[in-house]
Picture 1 (tube, helix red, strand yellow):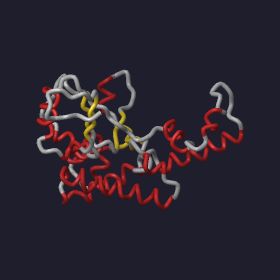
Picture 2: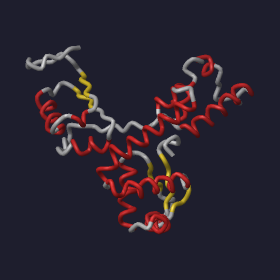
Picture 3: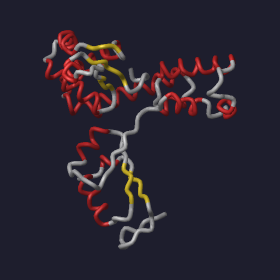
Length: 231
């Protein structure tokens, strides 16, 4: 439905605003919309989590709900990849072993997922060369757009090396002390960059399981990428 902003009444139930971070004083703008149009739900999205966080200086406590959108998981990947083969899913019975022909298809699809990840645009691309270029563009845009302003242009090289080392150790126990030595970096700076990676949804750390919480917090963690293709 169209919304007449000059009127006191808007007939829409939902209004979507994309690339929200480019609006000047976006937090104040959103707060004004919510206060003036209480019956409308505003769904705002953007391509840069860092810029969105910077834009939302107002807390908007009780007025907002944050929804994090991650890359496709394997079940979603299957639907994207087999969208032209609806019968593929109809033939699957989770209570029985897969038929040999379906098992082979599953193995091939899982191998694609493990290599290329779950970025929707990458998954929909059929050519390997195009997939590679898309992933390179995503990584380049991330470094230049989101990271440059956070770590400084002079630290981009070290940050890139950190990503390479983390990719090599993905899903393995990672020693922060060893990483800091390899990169000739202060531990405090390394931990700051790891924090940035987690808050920009690239890489995160998993605590080991101990019944003793002190050990759980002090022991080395595993490092994992949100998306295999980015890794």
